[in-house]
Image (tube, rainbow over all chains, first blue to last red; front, side, top):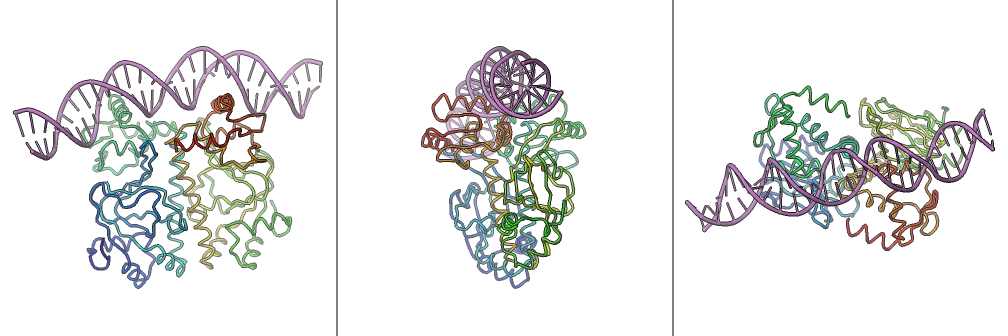
Length: 233
Length: 233
DNA sequence: AAGCTTGCTTGACTCACATCAAGGTGAGAA
DNA sequence: TTCTCACCTTGATGTGAGTCAAGCAAGCTT
C-alpha cells in the first residue's frame, strides 16, 4: 500500500482516467483525488476487504481480477461479480453512510487496485453534476444487470444460465472462448456446483453443440445455441 | 389521464412532496414538474406500461399497488417488486437512454400513479446536486436490496425466503400479518409456486410456529422463527 | 521417483420443489 | 337456488440439481 501519485505506472494512470467514475473530472480534481489515493498490490488470494467491514474508499481495478462474493456461516460462497481491469467497485460506500459493506473482495490472481477516499470523492461529486450523472449512469447499468440476474436465477435453469454466459463471453477467436479462471469459479458465478457444470458441459458436448478442451470452449453451433436460449428466454 | 396540478387531491400532493425523488426540490421546481405531470387512474388489472416499451416518464404511486413483473414467452411470470403508496419506480428511464423498459407494470388493485416527464426531471437533476444525491441514495438502496435478493434466491431455500419475508412484513397488530394481496401473488414474489407456498405454510402451522386463517398469518413464536433464519443466514 | 495437492469428472443417491390432477370453499352472477 | 369462477389445498409423481464419494490427470514438492 503506497501513495498513488508516486508509484502508479503510466498505463495504470490512463486506465484510471478512463474509468467512468473519474472521466468527467477536471485535471486538478483528478490530481487531488490521486494525491490521497492508495495503491494496493495484492497477491493471489489476498483479501482487499471483508464483508461487514466499514469502508472509507471506493476502488478501481488497474490490474488482474477481483472477486466479490458473499459467504454464509456454513461456508457456502456465492460470487457476486468478477471485477476486471478498468472497472470500479464498492461505490455503494458513498451512500451507505457508515453501514457495513455487503461483500468480501479477494484477488483472483495477482492484482492492483487503487483506493480513492470516499469522503473526498463525495466532495468532488458535490462540485460537479456531470460526475454525478456519470455515477448514476453506472449505478443504473448495474441495477439493470442485477435485475436480469434475478431473472436468470428464478425463471431459468442452470443450462440456460450457462448458455447465456457462453453467448456473451468474450471470444478469443471466432467461436472459441478461453476461460481465464478455473471452472469452479465459473460455476459459482452461475450459481451452480462444479459437478453440475461438468455434467452440463458434457451433455452439450454430446449434443455436438460445443467442444471442451481444458480451458477452451468452442461453440460448434452458435446458431443452435442462440435458438435454445431464445425459445426459453 | 389528466394534468396533475388540476386534479390531485391534497393527501396525494403531500405524498408526492415527501417522495425521495422530489423532497429536495424547491417549491417552484416542484410546481414546474407537476404542471407537465400526468395522473393515471388505473382499474384493477390495468396496465400502466409493458415490458419493452419506451418510456418518457418516471412514476410515483399515490394510491393502491403497482406490480412490476417480467414475463417469459411461455407465460411464466416473476414479480420483481410490488410498489406501494409513496414509492417511485422506473427511475432507470433517466439513464437508460432510449432503451426499452425491462418490466411490465400493472395495477394490483385500483391505483393512482403520477407520471413525471423524465427529460424535465433530468433538467431538475442538473440544476441541483442535492436532488442528485437523493436519487443516488435511492438507487444505492435498491441495488443493495437486489443484492440480498440474489442472495436469498441462490443461497437459501423457499422456506427461508418465506421466513425472512414474514419477519420483515408490516405487522397489523403485534404479531399478526394481514396479507393485502392474494397468496399466489406472494408466492410469485418469493419465486415459489402457490402449491409449495401452501405446503410450507401448512408445515409451519403444524410445527406451531404460525397460525394461518384466510388472509391472516399470526406469528406464534417470533423468537423461534428468528433463530431458524439466523441459523441459516 | 514417489507423494501431495488441486482441478476436474463420474456415478449413485437424495431432496426440494415443480407439475399434474383432483377436489374444496366462498362470492358473485344468472 | 344453482352455476361458475377465482383462490386455495392436497395427493401422486417427476425431475433438476445438490451431496457424497471415488478416481484420474497434471503440476508441485522433496
